[in-house]
Image (cartoon, rainbow, N blue to C red; front, side, top):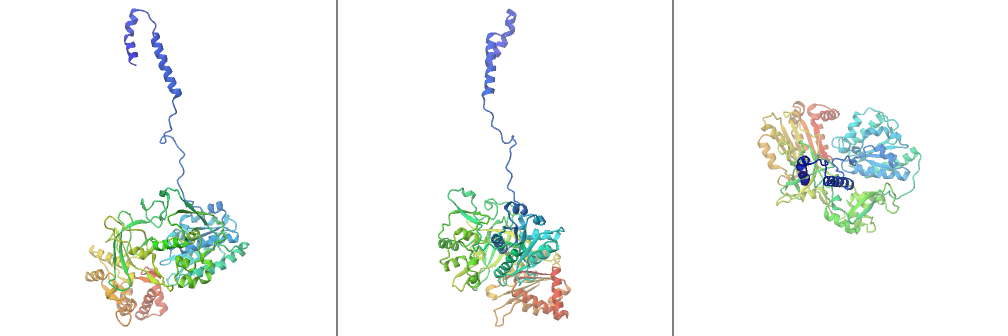
Length: 631
């Protein structure tokens, strides 16, 4: 370019001297050379790499969950779907067993979580020939649906459509010690019929207070022959269990792609993202873990979980669900007994119902001895394998049979008004010696006991989430409350007392706060004694009634104190609109307390037992008689 500029600068002067051509030979040569170089550059250069951000690419679709169980059934050739409403895993286990049973009768089944599918499609089930919907539905709390069946329950209540042509049956799981025995299963059975579905087999009722496994097996043995007759099919005669998975070992795999206990999203324990729920628990650090009782042969504990930054909110009376880990000693022994390397990375691949002719499920091979050998002797899977040396199932078969470890629920022993970033837990350690001489330890409570409060940079972590409850303080703080909670049943009432105290500090009018607590000995297991007595001193608790059952020759329980204070109780309930709360053992305590209320209402209300029973039922309907009980 410099040479060109020089040539052009002398051009006018040259033109004045002679009449030369406009371009000299040198100009033409240089011009031709430059043009040629430009053309060569354009013709020979590589095409530019496409720039992703400017080129519209066909992006892979994000992973989406199949929400149409009908389409899934059609694609996989299935005609039976088994829905489960499960809180502790038992209903899910029963559903899996029923879905695998189907192949023995020339049919194909699938177990399904109603939370993961669009239940509006139930009306389309008739599009599939010889189709059937089975519902294994557990009841939770005060006749409530389980967490994963809540949306289905809401849909049943709101749905007005027709389910003509839909065949169904229901097996209900519950406990007779509860007021609303098998309420969810009974409701689903009744409501489906109301919507036009056809019941093809009678409702099954499983009672966990008796023998739930036996109830299920008895129902199942009658159910399948009835289905064979209904659909005109015959059993295949194959006695072996239907295998659902095969094991594959991975020797060379990126460990970032290996699940190490996550319930849902891979690496969800490393990168925490709200919202936190049953499939995405929050890892809460343990800030306090102390023994509650002063003496005695039991161990009662108080833990505090830090939920700072989780965006979780709770109310007094809610439950905290924690996901424990199995005792490493038991897991190691299990590996030794089966002769497997527990450090091996494995996957269980779905076989879609492939049959394995040589493996028989434990619950079938030992069915005759199940009651005495397993239940009464409290043998876990390790004890069974130790006591039957000839029984050595493949590890993949064992993994298929063992249910996933489920969450444990505890009534929250704190108020979010006082402790917004902390959840308190009160629990009793479960340990006992079985008839075989083995020491059996509760999975969750022993795991919690060993969660040392973090110091020196170390944090003990508890995977948890909050389960909402209907166990609520009255909307009007001026209403009296009567709380009855012996033992660890005191837990939610610690939260109630904290909240009533906070309300008083805010200048609110707070009604009478009456507490009935019970324990064995005053000097051993009087839980939260200092806190309760301080609340009484401040006037937060207006009546603190404590029954020490074994401090005297004649045992005294909370129901005895209720009868002793019958006049006050009748006034508070009948005239002052008091709310009654009961927490603890369902089998004995809750029944005895309810009987005491019947007697008080009979005597002071001048009514019959039937009328007293109706009186309590009306209080329940109005939300003035609430129970948070377990068995």
